[in-house]
Amino acid sequence: MIDFYVCMGSACYLKGSNEIVEIINRQIEKHDLKAKVHLKGSFCLGPCNQGVVIKVGDKFFKKMSPENTIEKFENEIIPYIEILMNGGE
Image (cartoon, rainbow, N blue to C red; front, side):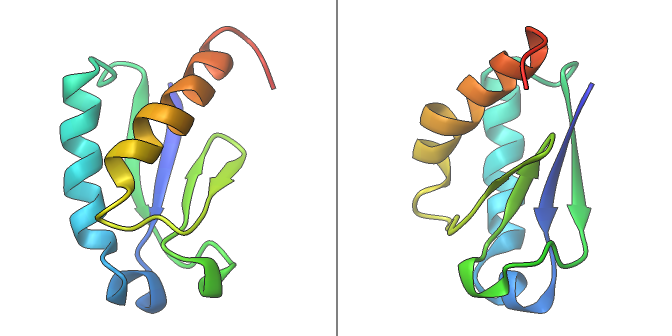
């Protein structure tokens, strides 16, 4: 199972991390990934000025927002999850 963290630190929280978690949960269900990823909230992941920050496996996805989450999930995060599931990185 792949760990999937969403920063819930104060800077990211103010930028909509709570809403992003809801959007990601819907995307996980839509793309049938529930058995493959474990979505968790996290304390600060580091680069607060580039939040909202998401960490999937060992890779950080920065500047997430409620407005761009679906696009980034489908175009960047899903392909990365597929790489991890196939033994890459």
